[in-house]
Image (cartoon, rainbow, N blue to C red):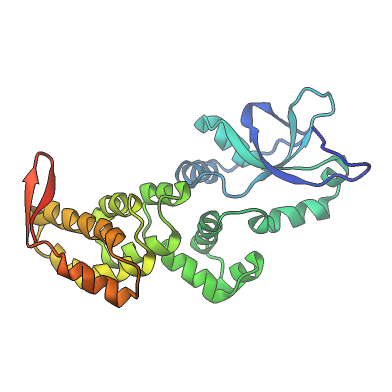
Length: 271
C-alpha cells in the first residue's frame, strides 16, 4: 500500500473506503453536536471538499489509520457515504505535524477541480473569512475569488450536483443565474446540458430572446418558452461556422413563428 520508491514516499490523493478507516490511538475527541450536524448537512449537499489525512495500517490489513479528519469521516459513516477523498502519507509524514498542517491548508491546490475549489471558497466566505484571506490561502487573486462566488450565486443542491457532474460549467451557470428565475433554473440547465451551446452564445441568446421579459408572460407560456430555448440551442449547432454576429443572423432567419404542443412537449410548426 505504501507505494514506495527506494526510501522515498510521495503523499497521494485518492478515494478511500470509509469502512476501512480506523482512528489512530488517542485520536478521539468530543465534538460540538450542532457543529457536527452542520458538517453533515454540508457533506450531504456538497460532498467532502477537504480530504482527510490517513496512513496505511502497519498490520497489512489494507485498512488506514486516521490522522486528520475525524469529523468528516464520522459524518460520512452516519450518512452512509462509501468513500472519502484522502491524502495517504507514510509514518514519517504522519509524525511531522508541520507537514500535515501544510497539507491541510494547501489541499485546495492539490488536484482539485475548479468547481470543488469554488465550493470550498464559497464555504469559507460564508463562514466569514475575508476575500483577501481566502485569496491568499488558495493562491488566487481577490478578483478570482469574487468571480467564483458570482458564478455560484444562488446555486441550489441540484445545480451543484450538475456542476460537479460536469453537465454545466461554472461560467455557464453564472450566465443562467443572471438571466433565469431560480424556480426555472433546473429546467434551463437540463436543456443547456444536452446541447453544445457555448457560454458566450447562451448569454447572447438570452438577451436576443428577451428571456426575462418572456418570463413576465407567466406560467401559461412556460412550455413554449422552454421549447423555444431548446430549439435555439440546438439550431445553433446547425448554423455554419463564422462570427457570432453572422451565426445569430442565420439563426434569426430560421426563427419559429409558431409552436404547438405534441403530447407532453412542444414542437416548431411554422417558421
